[in-house]
Image (cartoon, rainbow, N blue to C red; front, top):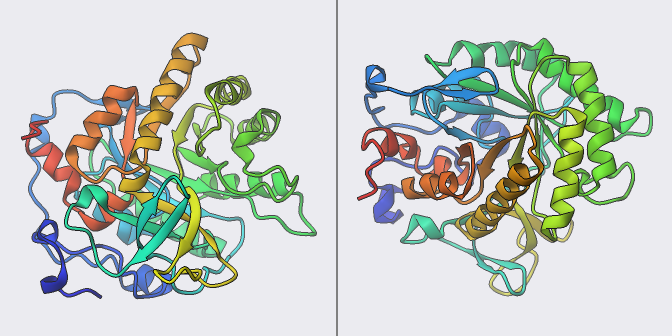
Length: 365
């Protein structure tokens, strides 16, 4: 783990929650790595509650699927003022993580769609970029049912837990059926709100990511809603090629009864070393990029999404994600049209990010 002396000024108050030098299992079992005092937050000063899919929450700030590996992580995040916490994506069965490395610091060249590994954190957290290559690992059913219950018990007043899930393709199980099974597992574990990861590759039909095909979004979305009943359903999506493609998908999602859309997920790019070799090995030449380098893409997504929702009069809640590493980025997303905003990389490397917002009451100076 990087020592305090080697970290830039913006890490002065705390260290990253996730240790990229350790394995996913070590982070799950031994983390989160937080050794600072948790700032006090005066809940009595909360004047407005936000209706998050039927749950009253104290702020529109949260954490998306990814960083919160288990109940210890969701509980800490909630104590740190993130009022909507998402339990890392689960599957219907146990699934192993990709081998190390899973995360690397990177500099991004958008024109060439290349992320080049760097050895240290940037001086400005707004420019913090990392890879994200885990393969969506999952614990088994018994573990999840017990741990998700603990995650719910760790919530504070006016906070919400979302459980993310994804289907697992196999030769003996229909992909969509397995998607439903994973969603029902989340519900069995007590999830009051669930999120289906539609930004995963659609290996079943070879069409790329699920969210990119409006017919698939409608068919799978309706299948999930029929199975989940009244449980609110969010779908996670990535970027679109153009706004009209996006419009078709959003209309299909609303028609299927989906309650909310969260975007964006990571941006896929080639991940290389300074010498141009695959940074994650020959079997993983591309990787999801997170943090500051995807902020503009996330904001553009939200602007287009709000335009579509308004013009089509869709009953969809909009959750903005991508590159939020400073408190002013929260406001940029809200001003762009997001109903709620979530931070992953920002929360992992600056765990006090939400409290910086709460305890300054929106003062950006």
